Length: 486
Image: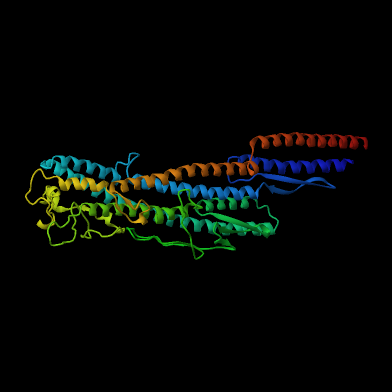
């Protein structure tokens, strides 16, 4: 090897070391950045020696797809669990102290005590007070369910806005990746940003990606609806100003196609949007149906029946509602829980007579079971206590038993909610573990290992010293040659 070849080789090596060191330094500084993929300088040999010909970015398409898929399922499951927990909180703490079942059980116990001592006016007032607590509990629970739906609807609106912003950013980024690839530019940073955007999008809605020539990419939902192809497709949603029983929320449209809600406690939702739809349109309305059925059953159970020969229709007794009449048939009356109240004729502070609960006749003499006003009369009170546990017909749309006592029906409602919440909690733990493992596997393949980078940095340091020594030797030889030449 000539001296000129040796000096050229050493200089090329130093240039390579500078590039490699710069890349290693960038890797090390981004070791804690989950959206950064490791870079590596690719070398190729030529007549001038080894040269850096490109900067390669670590990637694993299979693991990346698995990561965004598990992110979507984990996000959807966690969102559903949060919604079910919000619904559970309506019924109080772990003891469900605010649940209708708890309040009705307390009222039944008071009625039993009143039936044992029907002449006690204090027990009569206590029974009316407990009934009022039941009515307030149903109204408050109904209002809280609709508030959950409203807040969920508002969250959907916020996330749709965020999704559109992410898709717009993805469009800009994808153009930069494509144009940079065409001109031979290093687009590693742009690819990192694009992967980061896809991860964020997948938390909101399940996605699949399709890579095309020139590093171009298209995005579709898990159901095959186009989210991005050349340009971002619109995701539209109209938020509602409020909710009530029977009022449906608006749909989310992706490129003009309605997005379906998730199904089941181990939800099929991919991303948070489908889970939010599931809470707003499935679980919360079902809880509302159950509350309405409890309210309807209470009004029917305590309805007064004609005691004369006039064949008068049943009339509201202990409980009444805005509709006034006693509902007929085992059919959900939308919103009845929101207006149920204790009959004013029984409320002493409103000029009513609590003892009418014992005697009947709230709706007139024809409905009185104790026209003589006997203080020891308890038959009507006993019938109410028994009726709370006696099977009656319920609407199957409430997703519970269709023939059971009202107290058991109310308890089943709590059980139904807790069963779904518990299943969702278990699924959330499993899916979060899957998401974590997928992200960890991807990071192991494409992320930065400080140990490896520092080891390579030490190797470069030794190589740099060798090249520097070679230049020094060549320099000494050239000086000696020049001295010999005179």
